[in-house]
Image (cartoon, rainbow, N blue to C red; front, side, top):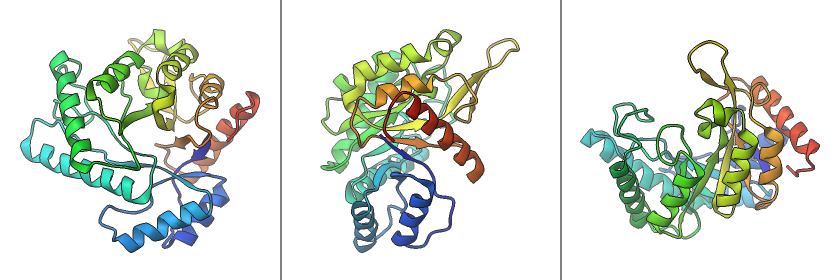
Length: 277
């Protein structure tokens, strides 16, 4: 595995970016440039990553390509295609988005998002994005989510079979799968099942944590790694059996200090189980 996360230092060039990653002890990184970048710029950052053994984990395409609003959907599809093309140009391991929502909030929830017809629409939409770009070096992936497809190991397996594209793969966010108390109290079993079914397809992972509240009814809150109930030892032990270059990426924290604390927890958990970061 390769630990990574955002760079908080202001960097203007590839050398500064690499230096910042090294100070943080990261061997994986989020894509540092925009899709509008010219070929020379893309090459410069890609070459810097390659020369210093940095893996560019993912290019985000965060948008709603299934929006019921025509203009929103059109812009989202354009973004998805452009970001997938950027991932292919720069050699990122994947481009990642959510499947999309039929509601007005781009990341849900909507009562329609887990309908069987919606599953078919996810398949059609994802195929269209991949077929338009025809990537040869990267993969288009969908992040696991609590209330839209893919919301379980089973639904992700179904999507892989139905989409039937060699450049479709898996983005694993274990916290986003924890959508009920039974899953919360058995996160070790959940991650083991996910990796058993989908491990060879995983291209990148997000590292977060989750906490079950003690007031009625059910409250599940995303928190910093080490301050919730996710079984990090099980997660890292399972991921360590996969591709040694698999990125595990910290996200959604607000300060550099929080990222330092999160990284320390992940490194300690990895050491406990003999996993390499």
